Length: 199
Length: 199
DNA sequence: TAGAATGCGGACCCTGGGTCCGCTTCGAAA
DNA sequence: TTTCGAAGCGGACCCAGGGTCCGCATTCTA
Image 1 (cartoon, rainbow over the protein chains, first blue to last red):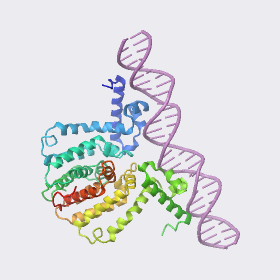
Image 2: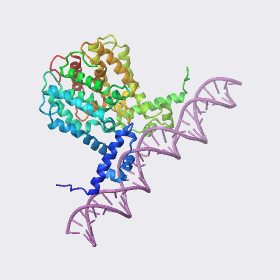
Image 3: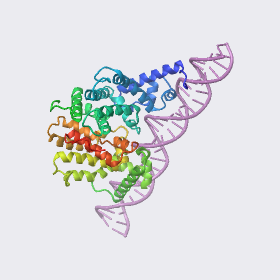
Image 4: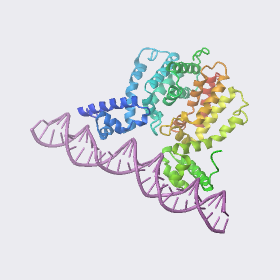
């Protein structure tokens, strides 16, 4: 067991930084006008502390993102239908995508910060691999879907933060419209669509 | 007619910069280890010249991208089938997506540079709007596809530069496999798929 | 309560995009 | 061909922001 328990002040500072950063990212217009110095100041902490705790900017953002994502991950892992594991893929796939869409809508700036953070591609983040694997496995259980792996990527691409931002922001598409459109698209891909219904 | 013809040296320098930048972006590992200073040096030109000619980094990249994209745009606008306008949507949609995929494969670094360039979202670039409008119009002519606008976004998202990079690079998916998978996915979305065929 | 280990913080460094301005080059008119 | 204003040049310079460093403070352990 390598790492020992952290000092009390370290834990407190870590929490303070997380809280401050969360607020700043929520309130800002664009994720990159919240600087590391801003976060440090808002948390009442020095830059050194901040970097010691999170390594670099990406590390901080990942941590925030992971914290926000946790409820969904739990719901998927062990929650009730339609997200939980006891759901047939035909229902669970759309539920998962809808959940991800809502997540991006509720955490626009943060998701944008993570996915657009300079050079680090969103595909390197651990959670992407997890969502993709889960989705692929579900798709494989569905009949008539070749290339489940690619399809999973394609579906996830449809809920990427900057696309969502583009639609929900400038284009002004309302939340429920967007959800309906995604649902329709998902249904089309899964072959479960009925006929022209959503907005 | 506002702008007059540029001076000869200006034109020459502009071309030199374009050429140098093109080479650098092609040769580099990651688009953001080619700096503006690098480009200037490689072109045998001062930074001032470079910024005068292109405004900023994004401007330069856009220009490069546009130049590379031109053949495809022409082929789509007035070329022979299956890309040209005299093609039924059922065939033209897959052709367009395939062309875009190949383009990203052939211009990985450049596309990456454009789509991931700091804060500017790829959805603000003019060509995105054009592709989207074209694709939407074609999809609308197809039966049984509600929400053509969203579907168009989703299909374009499936050929985004960083996804393509992720698949073609680290994952090592070969070019033709990727094309086949995209074709299969497109067919699924269009409702023209036959049954499990590609790799 | 002493000592060591851990953590703190903000001055500092460095990279890279973007600006500025005195000098050069161009090209149109004389 | 000479001339002269304008257009363009280039690299020194500026600045923001991410990341580091190290002397000092705090916390844990014996």
